[in-house]
Length: 158
Image (cartoon, rainbow, N blue to C red; front, side):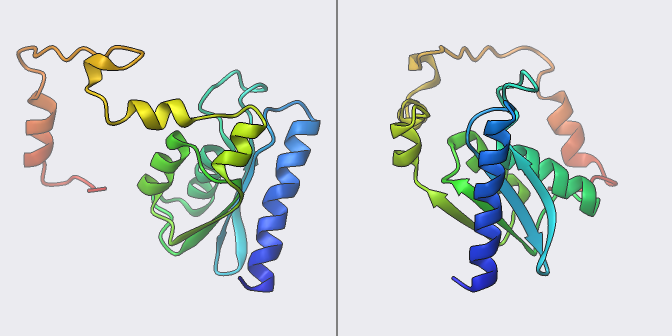
């Protein structure tokens, strides 16, 4: 890891402390860098936004995408204070940064009371067997939007 990369990771850690001290949410921070410049940053805002999806990584992705006027972060690096949770991991894959650096592990997070292991255990289960049962019900016309999308000539694929 280069000195610049260490510095960016330190900034993500500083954001985690700052957000926690200001009562925004848990001790998580994230920055996104492109061409050596910070293009997005955030701490966890779960409490201040009353939004369970307002994790630092998701908020930083939103910030970077807005600032870069794009929905993909190709050419960017993401620096986060902790190994991403399953939700953030999904958001990161959708955003497509080139690389992710993190400081704390999911085990460190679990030790501090942020344990996502139950989600990892839910993923391979049949949806009907999950703690929050998920029921698939085929309804006529449900695939209409997908069929139209497949034929849409002016779509922006992602």
